[in-house]
Length: 118
Image (cartoon, rainbow, N blue to C red; front, side):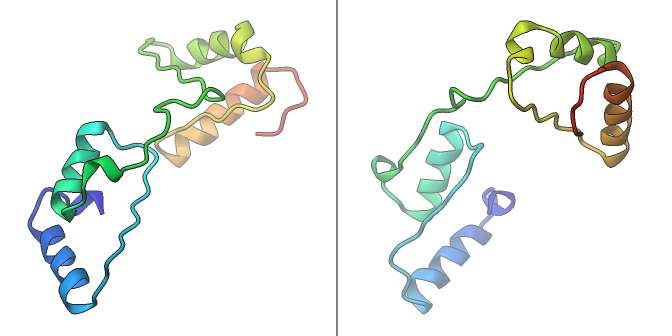
């Protein structure tokens, strides 16, 4: 739905749902929307923002880290060897492309001498 939020398509969809299909309840789920985006969605769907149930932005069991290091592999290895990550039972590393995933997995297999499954 987010890709159509900025046009009139969402308003047309809302009109069809309400008027043609008689939909009275809408459930929207997202794990990443900002407060601004949530308010925008409410405005487009004509939903009272006070009815939105919103949880923590970053759950307590999630640790986010962003790096702008020139050598990303070495920065990742350094990060994974820090105590805050060494104590984790599992770690998810997001990559944007399959080639990046394969390169990171190969690098970690070579440089981390632990019995982990990647």
